[in-house]
Image 1 (cartoon, rainbow, N blue to C red):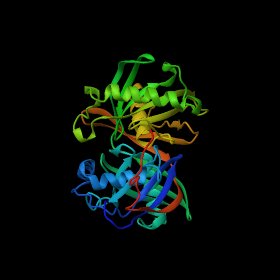
Image 2 (image 1 turned 45 degrees about the horizontal axis):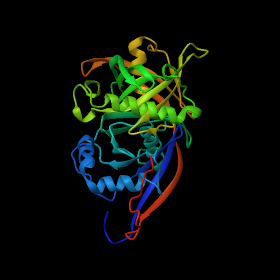
Image 3 (image 1 turned 180 degrees about the vertical axis):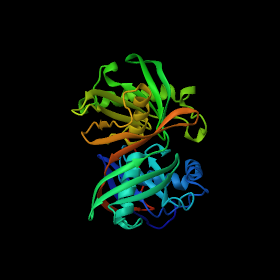
Amino acid sequence: MAGQQLLTISTVDYHAGGEPFRIVSEPPVAIEGATVAERRVFALADPDVDNLRKLLCSEPRGHADMYGGFITPPDDEGAHLGVLFWHKDGFSTACGHGSIALAAWAVHTGLVARDPSGTTTVVIDVPSGRVTLHVRTDGEKITGIDFVNVPSYRLAEQVTLATSRGDVTVDIAYGGALYAHLDAAGVGLAVTPEHYTDLIAIGREVKWALNDTEYARHPTDDRLSGIYGTILYDDLGADADGNPHQRNVAVFADGQVDRSPCGSGTCSRVAVLAATGTLKPGRTLVHDSIVGSRFTARIAEELTADGHRSVIPVVTGTAYRTGEHRFALDPDDDLGTGFVLR
């Protein structure tokens, strides 16, 4: 990354529910490891991989809420590809909206051939495990993508925290990453753009209050430990068919805001609602984002995983290509790999 020649990197960008996803199909650095989980550990410690992340995520080529992934080989022949997810603060264990975007990209590029039945299955190895996506098509058009995630479960309920907005109670749930779930009304907020700054502030506060506690420990794999973000939600009651309808914003990493309803966050929300009996098999969670985009989610299976009553969530959304880019790093550029103001 620090060579004396102009470095160029090609990307293809998508969005899912308004949240960006920048795909690097051929990372120009070595990312070592036998599995995607091992490659994430390598990336967290390797300056060349981290500088590539900074280059593509930071200003002036990206922004504080940018997201993307480096394509890697899969763990074995059972998957089509692997991916390392990244954001402004590092490398995440899971990303549902990114998985949805990757499935669209895999079909668009022919990496995975379209199934003439109209449903093409794309299997991806991510740091939290293996996920499956079913891409539904009508001719050349993608009409919807079902994201089948790893087993998800509530890890702790009604955890009380002291915050600048008073005492709050949160649930902790795993959906490929660990999230704290907080009712926005309980801190005098609503999940709307008008409350954007305050939502970020309380989301960060809750995350960091929990991140070094027992509640942030994954029960079987410490590589998955740490509170990834806070999901603040509005309960909007039930839709006309009696399905639970909620609106949420995921404040993740260190103050990064998911514009989509958040794929892995929606999975952890399904786990919480399943544990409380609010979402039952055969019902659908209608899950809106702070910008008005929507995912739906359902329970595909109930099981026990990592010693917890768990569900296999299926999140449905879609993704759209927004552009192709050829970025450059001039060796004489004083700003180098860029900067982040938040």
